Length: 137
Image (cartoon, rainbow, N blue to C red; front, top):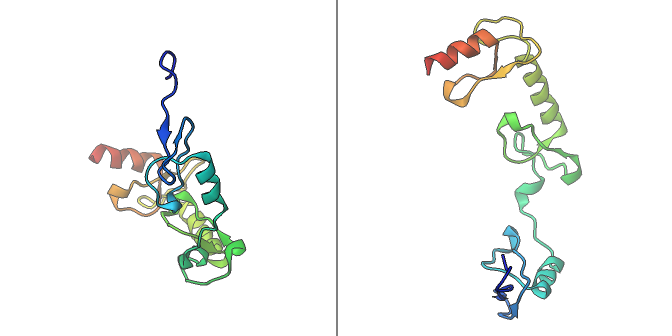
């Protein structure tokens, strides 16, 4: 913590200077070790090339551009972005799944319970079916 011995100086991984203050590099820079302030600023000024897949819809592959892509909900287990029509379609199907229990077809209340991945069920469960599935494990 530097209470009695003071701060230890570290070496910059780019210019190899000794400095008491170092910064952690970003993942996109693909650098190991710490950076001094000057090198960190120099790397911040460089543009990071975008991947071709960054501006593409994950479902349909459309290229509407960065401004018209939507981030999928966490429950959907999708990595990437969705265009507006695909997002709306996925949202609509998700709302339909929240209406009734997938096992007993009972109307779901205020708090539907999402089925766990290990159960191999896609949808939501009522409280009774959830407890039944939990007791099987």
